[in-house]
Length: 331
Image 1 (cartoon, rainbow, N blue to C red):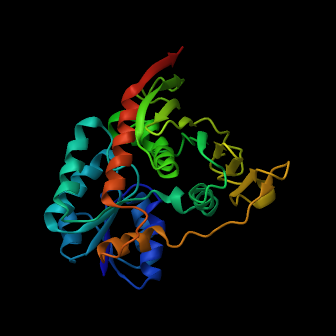
Image 2: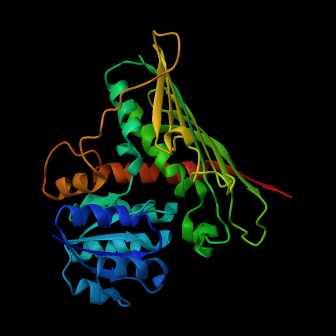
């Protein structure tokens, strides 16, 4: 298949490019009007960098990947739907409630496959925890706590990241991964949510909130606390310090999604049930990759991990979570 990149404002899209090339697909080029990231990728892969979208479309791609500014992605998805081009987008694909109907219409029509880079599902310790839950090793689920502190690196971060309209905000941009994992782990949908968005500093960015805390109840009764912030010290060895805590009726589990210095940043999981202490578990590798899973959807193969409906439901939950939160501004 032929593929191209339509909008390139975040390096996350590099994972999609690398996998597509490794699988033998043809890279036809990149469209982007600001070449900071795109220019480097075009040189690295030896493909043209177009400054007009129609020039990329003229290469007749079967799939487009996009890491455009977040609030531009729905326009790209609608263009792809009209052209019959499948699309993989960095998260999030929807930044506000008013755009949910647009995604719903695309999914309902079913003309194209829509991918969102929900990469956490394929993180080996996270996939292992999901398998343990499916096998009942932790008993019935009781609760989750998911923590997602990130470095902000404000001096090098593009201005659009600080705009609620363009970025979607911390709940939509960061916690979208965590509400997706909560849906996946529990096999249930969000029933209720309350929480807070907190702003400390950055008065020059009026709509930028740097932390989010959500309390969620799922339809099956599992409760969860989701936390994210842009307050990780720049000196920390990794981009952040993600943690997942799972409580079941027969045991508990913990994942460090960015590892520690002893593991050189490699993630790992611990659990306790009958042993009297936490132990490292043997990881179960995910049976596919994000890109292979998406290609299987296009080819109509059964058993894919992420579907159009999953993208829709996770996006809807993230928007509902964001809209439920009370805003706090500190002087």
